[in-house]
Length: 335
Image (cartoon, rainbow, N blue to C red; front, side, top):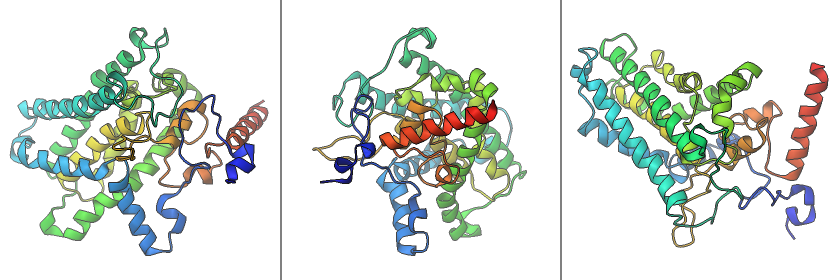
């Protein structure tokens, strides 16, 4: 008998969830065994190649950088046709990746509802632009977020070309060149948690973040479906390169992954199923819980910030009860 069989409070609510990973879900990634260097290396490797396909995206951006990205000399001339070239690259990436995931899971239903988290699929209703969740999400992703992504990327690349921000190349030191790719996700986790808490402040949530939270059940296009203010805040993660010595490849990969990764984490499915297996792993049940319950799991499962701030939901009925008790106490304090 499993732990969840013996204690109903450790079960999930099957009225909400069609599928779920083992619960209670774990949090902390490498931080669960930070003193064990082998466990740390295994955790880092898994975060790049075992889930979210981050490693595959790095390879793709490297390929694009050496084939179709504009040359630094061209970028250094200032506003020119190269900006539209970068926009076209980003548009192609979003259409192929985010659109491809949507076609696979929600248009052609290649694996039906197998490994789908929520019992419901995409929705329609007046709360969505055009009355349709998919069209709403595509509008905010392609019109707003794509433009902001390109603006940040082009701005940082131009500053690098002008020598305004600290530079680093492979010849300056391979160790830092590689290490920066490994360190970027930890900065992402901290930045995301902080700005996400800000976006849940009363005014910010009502007028800005609520656009994203229209999506209780999420799909690939939900990831970057954001109000322009939220898009600018979310993608400001890239400003770390104003301080840290970087190469344009770091900048291009960093913001491209940050703009395209949410299509995977919001896809609503745990993984693509090939021959009954689960690879690549895509959906993030940790964040799916946030979209369902709002007041929990503000960060991501790579770092234990939600545990430290008592906002962690472990996916169980007990986790929901604990969250509701915390919210009730907070309301009493405000009164």
